[in-house]
Amino acid sequence: MEWKSYLVINLSDSEVNTQSLFSIAKSSGAGVVGVADLSILKDLEVHSISLEKFKYGISIGIPLPNMAIDMIELNNPGILYAHAYHLANNLIDTTLLRIAGWISGEGYLALAIPASLRIDLKRNIGHISHKAIACAAGVGWIGRNGLLINPIYGPRLRLGTVLTDMPLKSGKPMKNQCGICRLCVDSCPTNALKYSDFEYYPTKREDIFNPEKCSSRLDEMKNLLSKYSSIYAATVCGICIKVCPIGKKLSNKFIK
Image 1: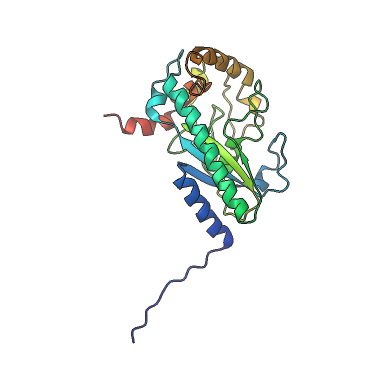
Image 2: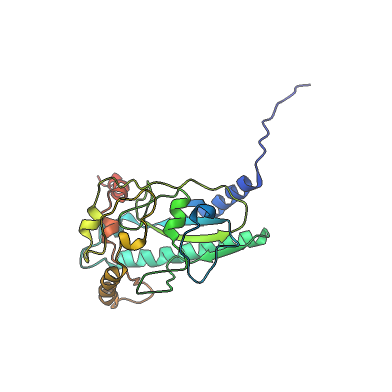
């Protein structure tokens, strides 16, 4: 009789759950996915919700098409970018609900936070910062444009979050890797961005970003895009996304 040896790998519940989570997210179209330990975000500002019952924040990101972003102009973001932005948000929200449904079916708490739902339009504030969750999950770092910068996609991502108490394996936060680059700051049409050095997060959002100036720009773009069907015309600008050299690396790879 021949004896065969088999390698038995005992995975913890958190590892098994995380593998299943990643599989669901990727099969739903997510380009990136990560898990944040909420205990390291105790000072994170939230609105109309509480983090008390949750232990982890699941971050998913949907990449935006490079060609649409590269076609953005100073005075016209373009309907193709606005359309992609809108559909990416829809895909994120659908994926979040699928993940939350799976978690609930496993007997745990789950709360999906939509991609672009805003509580305060003037201050551009939602229930929670998707970018803070994504940074804590190791999906990317907070850039000087106030956006999440993924090592592969740069800021060319839309983000969403699911809060849960399901045991998961969390990632490690990423430090700011913008170096001395200030392209986004210098390129902002309304001077809404301020140059600031920080390791993980700015002390407060206003240290790097003026939401009222950004909102005034978005109001202009809303009027410009109003001639299109509203279902396709998300309110976008995109200049600080287009100029980021991290995202351009991937885009230039396919340009001969």
